[in-house]
Image (tube, rainbow, N blue to C red; front, side, top):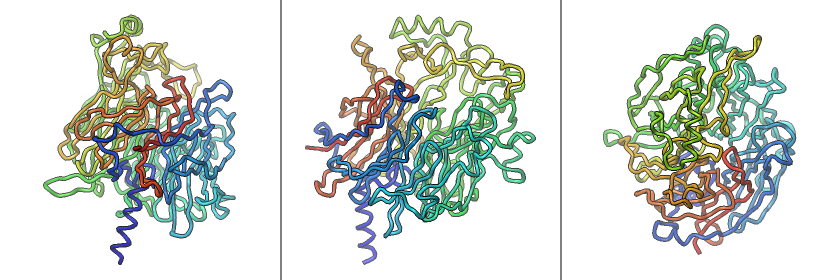
Amino acid sequence: MKRISALLVSTALAQEWPYYGGDPGGMKHSPLRQITPANVSKLRVAWEFKTGDVSDGKTLPVRSSFEGTPLVIDGVMYLTTPFNRLIALDPETGKQLWAFDPKLDRERPFNLYINRGAAYWTNGKLKRILYGTLDGRLLSIDAATGEPDPGFGVKGFVDLRKGVADKFPGRGYGMTSPPAIYKNLVICGALAHDGEPQGPAGDVRAFDVATGKLVWQFHTVPHAGEFGNDTWEGDSWKERGGANAWSILSVDQQRGLVFLPLTSPATDLYGGDRKGANLFGDSLVALDAATGRRKWHFQTVHHNIWDYDLPAQPNLITVTRARRPVPAVSQVTKTGFVFVFDRVTGKPLFNIEERKVPPSEIPGEQAWPTQPFPVKPPPVTRQSMHPGELNNAVPETRAFCEKLIEGAVFGGLYTPIGLKPTVLFPSTNGGPNWGGASFDPETQTLFVNSMDIGFIQRMAKRPEGSLIPYRSQGMQTPNSRFWDRNLIPCQQPPWGHLTAIDMNTGEFRWRSVLGVIDDLVARGIPPTGTSNLGGSIVTAGGLVFIGATNDSRFRAFDKRTGKELWVHRLPASAHATPASYVGKRTKKQYVVVAAGGGNKYNSTFADTLIAFSLP
């Protein structure tokens, strides 16, 4: 009877999307098989839902980015919006069941109105949706009613600023990604201010899911006497901002491990006041999920001065070594590297070499002399450029970029930004970004979307008495990226890819150009690929679904060949990761994605959640 009950539970979960990444370890894999390469061309819009939560920055002070991935549990869909509202929908019709509004102050100068999703907890009787807000609240909402849980914190919320941001009341601190759940713990990272050296701590914390009481706290910048504190010169660790987990955490429930993708210490482009390797900045850290104690770590960038955060959820996967299954964790990075480790021991499953990199010319800066380079897999994004590779496809772009690079330095990966304009690949947005990767357990293939967008910056002297003596200074391009004013990159295409990696061998299975620029296609230029934010999912039916691209398209690729099989035009770009589930009544497989556009890549804004199914 126990085996039959377990099978029924497993089947139910397979038909839902109960976690941000589909499962606690973020594989972003759906076992559903209704939609296949043979019938995907018949996909149609099943329903649309408009949240009403959208801003182009003209009326409200901040722009919106609809990056949410909904959960689907027990026949209900739970969606978070850019204004941090939580909405329950019927997943087969898109009809709203209830909505909860945390009353975010929309006049505050956030970077973006944004929220990527929520988490679900149940003890079999009580059911709660837990998520964070831009202003630093952790909320527990009754999944049935949409009402705050009165026993959690104060009237249903915990003030996350307490204990980490008390000394910095004016600095930004909040949550943009869903928390992780382990047993009766809700484990939270945060988006922390990194514009000044000192600021709110990037610590990762676990709270009791019933009461909201703090259970453990992991110092991402080690305090005196703690492991890693000696990687900070003198007292530079004190009140250091950054080194936070703004992206998504992963949990190995069987082994009781939680995996943290940590980011750059503050400030992210100058480190003269924090000499040393700076643990645990830019490290993948495995903790005991029950206690918060460190099990192992690996630092992917030493003394980060490029804003090369770990932006994405670690993928908990299984690979084959010596004909035996090995529990592994893979971590995609902004630099385009994919690191792969034994999940339990932290041992690299492909060799990693420490290679010499250039020193910094900035007075007071002390770049780390080496950086880790995995031998396999190959990088999924461009990591260098020379002037002879300027864009030949678009004459006006080339003319603009020729002037832009006059006197510029072209460096390879980990070249420190200098006093002259410095062209580097990838940009501060990656390569891969928070959309991360999806993993197919059947073929043991990892699917990674990435963009080949560089940046051009220089370091400029600050006025006497400034907290730090140098700041990065962008050139006359949008967001300091290496493109023209129409966002056409300065280097030759392609500019975006979807890459399939055999995680047993570390070799590419295939690599497809991802995205188009309509104006260039109209001029007879073949598809170039484009910038992309958001991730993919892979299905047992044989498909990789992905929006992400800055061209207002939603696509399906054959997971075995990389051939684009289906494309649908959206009202705005889908800078979000999809989800897939089966309707309880219709028994149909649905694929759903948020199309919100905006962010920093385009001026088309929308608020539409769109579900697709077969006729």
